[in-house]
Every structure is written in structure tokens, then in C-alpha cells.
Amino acid sequence: MNKPTVHDIAKEAGVSLATVDRVLNARAGVRDKTIAKVQAAVARLGYVRDTYAANLAKKRQYRFAFVLPEGPSQFVDTLAAAIEEAYASQVADRTLIEIIRVPLLDPHVIVRNLLSLQTDRLDGVALMVPETPQVRDAVARLKHEGISVVTLVSDLPNSQRDYFIGTNSVAAGRTAGLLMGRFVRRGGEVLVVSNSMRSRDSLERRLGFDEVISFDFNTLTTLPSVEFFDDPARMEGVIAEVIARRPDLVGVYSMGSGNKAMLNALRRTGRLGDLVVIAHELSPTTRKALVENEVAAVIAQNVGHLSRSALRVLRNLSDNLPIYEAQERVRIEILVRENLV
Image 1 (cartoon, rainbow, N blue to C red):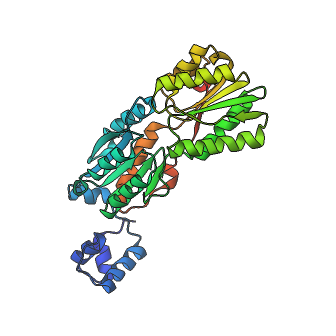
Image 2 (cartoon, rainbow, N blue to C red):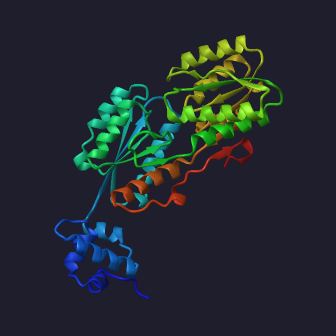
Image 3 (cartoon, rainbow, N blue to C red):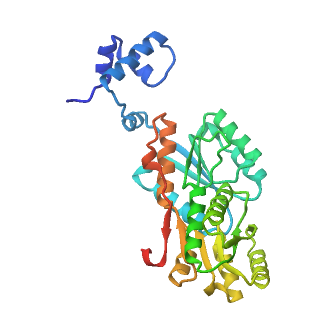
């Protein structure tokens, strides 16, 4: 059976082709009663609009901005490279993108960058930034101006963003807690490190980690989170002090970026070989550490999936099309030395 066409809709609804076109493209000048007739005909016929063909006919181009943290993060660099790769693929056909790097710890600079976006020449924005009142206000302004907003890796659930693309951070933290409890063979203390606890993903990972350790591995004690704010010297100093003062330390949980500084600091103390280290995100540093048995496991998310999903979701939001949840769900991956490829 042939697919229904706009001609079939016009005949079924008893209206002209021009009227069908106006209704399908949500243009003004059509009475509510007529819109209802066309929509009813669409439903009866099972018409599915070919958005690709419609955009091609209109020579439509999508314009998206990706706002990512700047600084020494191999994961963010890998994500940026994956976005560039996705941009060169078919999923980004007729799409222009711009990658904007902002300081993670300065919400005012982040907001200035968001408010400087040329919204009249933009369809959507993907954000990987901490949630602050200023950022939430900036997201509200973008939405008010008709811009689709998605979040990447770290969510802004209290903002007006349209969609989150990334793993469940609480579940990722719970996974880290389970791995830590299974790998550690005795009771003791676990050091938890993060670049910044302002990031939603770090907060939620810590919550999930503590839940599992408290209920399932109560011979372990988690120490307060240590933040190093992109400062390797701070990381080295804190870890050296913890190692010197905490003889019962049995593990280290690294919740985000900063794995290179963390591992270097542990190497200098001479304790890296006898501590269980669980980290997040696969990078050249964590891959090498896995191979050399310095890290027990890495909890990862596929950056290629993140990038392609962001482009698909932004395009669907721009076209008012449904989002296929199963396709866009980013799964938690557990990597150990034996399953690296």
C-alpha cells in the first residue's frame, strides 16, 4: 500500500493543498475548525511527514551551540572531538555547530557566554555546565527566545531545559560503591575526590556511592569529598596529607575529571599499588592506568553516543518531533583491564 500524501489529506479533509500545507507547517490564517479537519484526516490516514524532505526542499540548516567546560579535562577534550566527528557524519547533515568553552567555576562568565549567543541565528544549545541560579535564569531566557536546550553529562533538572543526555549519575555512583565494596578485601577508609562538587553529576555520584557503602559494605568509611578545582598542586598536597594521616585508607573514588592529577599524586606517595582506585570516564590516562593495574575499574559513558544523541535530539526538538527514548538512553559501562578493546 502506498504511503498517504498531502493530496490524500486534502481530499479526505475536503480542503485545498495550500490549506494542508499551512496546517502542517503551523502557519497562521487557518480557522480552528479547518485545522481540526486536517488533523483528523492526518490521523485517519496515518500520514507521517517526511521532515528530512521538507527541510531539504526549504534548504533548511540547523544551527547548534555546544557549551563545554574549559580546562585540563581529557574527558571533555574527548567529548569535543566526538562532537566534531559526529558533525562530519550523516547525523549532522545540513547542520552547523559551534563549540564554546567556558570556565567551569565561574557562573558569571558562563552566563555571559550564554547571553551573548545570537539567538536569531540559533536553533538549539547543548550545555555541560554546573547548575546555579544564574545559569537557570540564562536557560529560561534562551527558552523564552525559542531556543531548544539540552544538557550533556551533568544535568540541570531545576531549569527549563528540554532534555538530558547522559547516564543516571546516582546509578553510576551506586555502581562505583558496589565495585569498591567488592574489590576491597578488608575494612577501612575510602577517599572521595572531585574537581568540584558544584557539578550535579558529582553530587549525585557521591549520593549513590554513599548509599551502597552505608547499606552493603559498612566496614568501609567514606571520607569527606576533596575538591581540587583544576589545581594539580592542591590535589597532590591533599592526597599526600591524607596518606600520611590515614593509615587505614584502602581505596580512592575519583568522581570526575582530574584523574591524571590524582594518579600522579598517588604515585608519589608510593601507595597506588595497594589502594583500590575506581574512576569515571575513559581517557588516555585511565586507559593506561587500567592496563597497568593502577586503577581497578572505570565507569564510562560512550562519548560518540552522547554526541550523536545530542544532535538527533536537538534536531527533533527544532522540528517538534518525538524523541525516541530507547535510542537516546546512554548506558553505564564498566571497564576493567580484561575488557578493554
